[in-house]
Image (cartoon, rainbow, N blue to C red):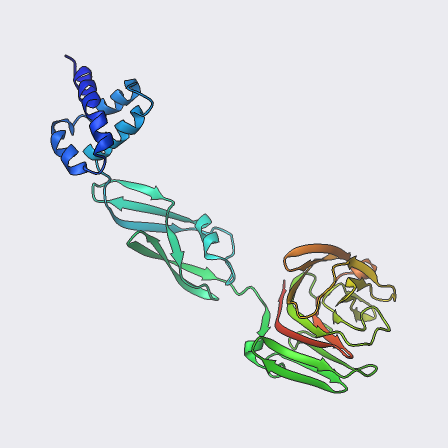
Length: 337
């Protein structure tokens, strides 16, 4: 008989046994030890075996018994982000695009791995990130860049000495609570509380940037002379710089939805009619470019606003609560190009 015929007969004889004794790898390996040098013949047998619909399954079980998987001894990793910038807010999972992990086995074999996990924390500067594949680990160094030019949260305390300037008219009550800073404004004409980053002045021009604010309204108050009068207003962007200096458009959030007005006009335009409900947290994000601002609420795009008068834009985020409004805000972030 040929070697192929011998192997085929052995394969046929042991197929049903492997199916019933799938867990008995050591016994199967001992019985078939003389064939452990015939892997190439077994591969040939696979191409010809037509015992039944489970033929391939039997073969794979036989091969696993004869040639058990090697143990992973170590891993190595190469990290190459190229020209891509990694920020301190970049999810670790995104780093996998720049990482090649190689597994080294006890039989001398090496192969590229895709099943591995990353752990660690990204902060501005050099970071050590751990790569794990089973019980085997290695590390890489990742340089991260600060994403936000300025960021404030209620964990930093009341606005004032931490870079977030506050300007108030009338009686304004600020309370540091467990989930943010609560601001209540006197319900009298021309009363307000305004907050902005101290590092920006009206003479600074940024044509691109991002502003994020997280807030909830506890009470809107009764003042409603203008569409924004009983709500929260953001002078976040949309401005223009000309010979007369910098002007800023307005973005308002109240029971009517999201409204905006261009600098130099008094007509408010409805951008989105989703009511800003009481006692509900919202994250508003404004992405400013040279010609427009894209507005997002809780990650959902609600519309674009053209730069006022088609002039060059300026980003100078200002958060304002008007008369009668009771609002809590917990985060103020900005990034300038």
